[in-house]
Figure (cartoon, one colour):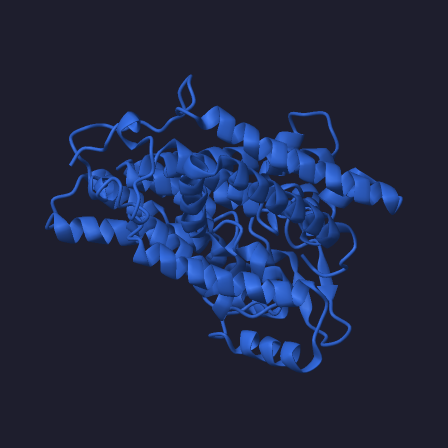
Length: 417
């Protein structure tokens, strides 16, 4: 079934779930239908994309303003806070000096934390741009992260527009920009880069562009440890297409699917080679950072400690946000979202819930899981048709709370982001 035109999907149908307004037509042609679909990188943006991107930029620029105000009150430099917070220092060091040049020994456990735990795409881009632009490393790191955030917002809009049309796509971008931990989009972190690559890879899968999907998924695998979720989504849709079409799929599907996991697997094996343990070396490096998949044992311990001893606001809120992510994923599945989005979001939720590490950082890991926001975007878009003033008020309040909490996380919480 051909995809409906934008005019035919301008209003959000009542009583349907994610992906049902287009009778799942988008994923069904992923195996290579006769009609060629181009990625929207041409001279013109997708219809309605400009207002959505303006909304995103206004929220995130306001976020930077809130951080600037908080830093001014604390007499701290804005640029230093944005570019050298927590993990940002490691990325900048790798960009400037390369791998194997920095270690940190934990005084409490004696664990040796190495820079091999950080994936190479972001520091590689910083180094590449720094060779061209005569500006400081800090400025380059922020330029790369901010540019990726804008590309990610457009990719999220493209997916929302393809599945449901302008209204939901705009709401989706706005909700993503106003997440409680969206402050990571303003600083020198990798969430924006992963989201950009994931969004466009998933869009390529949903529109049958398998070579694009594979290359972008491979790059996503070089951006963050959770980047392999993109390759998993590509593989899941490919398997479905192969089964449905009984193996009669274009060669690009096989090639793109084979390319998708190469970035993540290549770096993991490279770290293993450097450590002398090809298959397990990378995971040992991550273990020193208390980062491993323990099937939720760490989450259970955290919950027990939180109930017994309490904690600062970041900890109970982190728990609420993780639980909300699980609920939103269930809604995404019930609403029959495209398979690529379900697999990608599901992998990120599984890693977040089942992984160890600082619990306060878990909501940050979910920032790239934008498909989880579809149910919220649908609610906003439907309400806008009836009570636009109410929606505007609620959205403004949520954005203000997000900016306030984000500036608190970055300047006052003293909790690893």
